[in-house]
Image 1: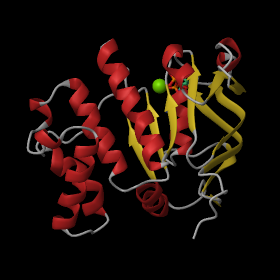
Image 2 (image 1 turned 180 degrees about the vertical axis):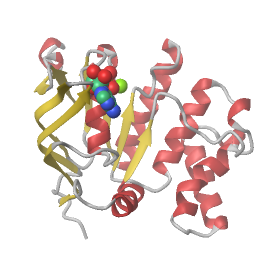
Image 3 (image 1 turned 180 degrees about the horizontal axis):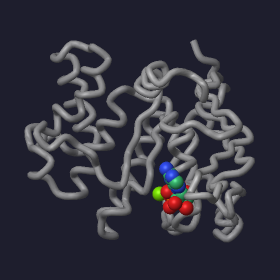
Length: 240
Ligand SMILES: Nc1ncnc2c1ncn2[C@@H]1O[C@H](COP(=O)(O)OP(=O)(O)O)[C@@H](O)[C@H]1O
Ligand SMILES: [Mg+2]
């Protein structure tokens, strides 16, 4: 059993440098970040500030130049790709700006896929997929393919797919960036509702300050450093 107080994700002294021709550019320097069970945290910052880079490091999709990332207390930065892939499938769900659904599969098949990868039987995987598509109000779209769904519906399928493994955290990179304002608000509300109802921690990258303000906490990337954002201070004091 995992201790309920162990952070889902904890990054210490993260540094990520990229070689750009002869230039060695530090995109992140000395970044510390903690996501506890059930947290909802926005990661904001200007375009190119390193938000996606940070999320990739947190999700074990990339390795830091220095520093470590702990997933449920285990440093997984130096593990093999296969082991990281296994941990990722066990504990994390991902939602991106573009849905990354497989076009040939139906909504239910797309959502069931992470379970099939875990070798869960196809009937059980289908049942779970139906359950999570119901949770995102798409019970009537099980057998639709991505091309037969609207942009907002596709993102909701992607959210169901991220939740189907009952992960400890969802890492979302600009999940509403490709939607109009109304759909963006709906998808954003859905992610928050799922965080509340399932206790799945949410780390959400966005450049939309209005959305970020709605979350419990926000941090901001500025010149490679991560700071507590000033959004909370700028919002009105809570009503007594
Ligand atoms: N694989 C890579 N190789 C070289 N430079 C990269 C790579 N990935 C990201 N960068 C650089 O890192 C910086 C931050 O990128 P990114 O994390 O995508 O920013 P954001 O998501 O905040 O817009 C950018 O200057 C980008 O060009
Ligand atoms: Mg990005």
